[in-house]
Structure formats: C-alpha cells, structure tokens
Length: 288
Image 1 (cartoon, one colour):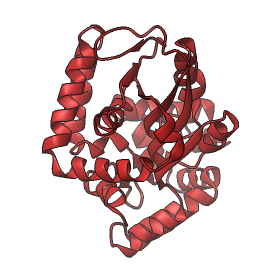
Image 2 (cartoon, one colour):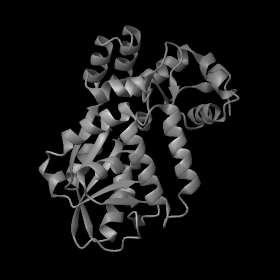
Image 3 (cartoon, helix red, strand yellow):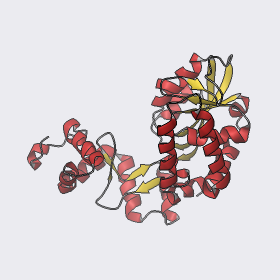
Image 4 (tube, one colour):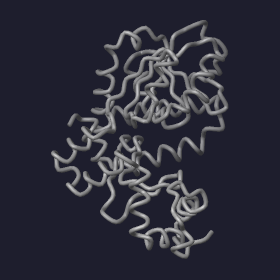
C-alpha cells in the first residue's frame, strides 16, 4: 500500500466495522466501512477543528478565503502525515497534461478545500473557492470572469459526481471557465468517473475503493479476515448484505431506533420508513 492508502487507515479516514456492528449511512442503509477522507488532515480531531473553523467563518466571503488558505497551508507545512499524503497526490497529478493545461485550481465547499488549497500552493496556480450558492472567490475578491480559462478541480472524493453536476461545473461555467481535469484522493467507484468522462473532464484518483484495495489492507494486517469477508459481501451486493444482516440481527435495528444518538436514530428510522431492503418489519414488531 502507498502512503495515501496507509494514511487513510492511520488517521481513521477509513474505518471498518467490527462483526455485528456495521455503520449506519445517511441513506438509511448499513455497511461494513465508512470513509471520511478529510481525516487525512492530521486525523479526526484536527480535521473537525478545521471544519469548525470553516463553519464559524464562512459567512464573511471577503475575508474567509485568505484566512483559510493560511490555516491549511501552515498545517500542510508542519504536519508530516498530511504533508506526505499531499506531496504524493501532487506528484501523481502534476504530470497529467490536462492538469498542466489548467490555469486555475478549484475546490468546492467545504471538504474539497482541505486538498485543493495545498495543491494550489504547490502548483502555483491561483485557487478558486466555489461555494454552495455557486459564487466563486479568490483569496482577494469575488470572481466574475476567468475569460475562458481552463480549471483543474480538486476534491476529497468522488462517488456519483453529483456535486460536480449540481454545483462545481455550473459555477465555473458561470464565470466563463471550463473544468478540464478532476483530481480526487478517493474514488468510491460509484459512477462518478464515468459521469466526468461523459462531461469531457479527465479524472484521476489516488485510491480506488474496490476489492483489490481491501485485499491489500488485509495483507498489510490493517483489517482482519472477517472484516475483509464482510466487505466483499457488501461490495458484491449491498442490498442483500443489509437485508441479511438486519433480519438476522433485528436487535441491532431495535437498539438503533432507540439510540440516544440522534444521528443513529434518524438513520435507523429512515431505514424503516423508506425500507430500502424490502423487509417485512411488521413481522418483527417494528413500526414507525
């Protein structure tokens, strides 16, 4: 495994569940692993501190981009683990002709910025902060027109590339720019790269979340054989995995529905109300 792959485990950016306790996802489904790519920023505590800083200061767009740039760049300079991961990522993408042809680096609100800022710093290409309202700022001002410039977008991960379709591509088009390259730390292998290709955007990811990745993690003793098998079952058929687990471990669902943790309770409630697994919950005495 390379530095980035190992760092994903060392920082807890990828966590694999113990047997009998899968993770709840926002969709109301369950799975044996969870990805928080932004944990590469020094670990969970450091990354959460940064996200808290973003949330508290993001409303002042005139001042915020410069402050965040200094914060992230200083951390990149001083944190060995984050520094090594970013350097490897940059070494991988800097040789790509599409990346080289881009005049700007962009990153989308808000986790993308953790990675797009240091890539901008290393490449010397100006950084464009894309906000969810589709406004675009530099560290100095609001950007209205980049005069047909090419842009390389840097992201923490891609799943289905819905953020690109909904926000990042339209925002750059709005200022007369064109995203020609996408670089991400992780590709969840859920169709995002295919969407980008159809949109005329070349993409590159350092890590692909597939069987080969988890097999390497098992061989490196980063996950157990049981965890690996559970992940294989999930990736082969996530619906069957969830249905089988919940029907055999109904107490897990009941405990989640009664959890004092609001996030857990909300996700379990969504599982029952939307029923993605087509389970007859009435037969288990479960009603919402």
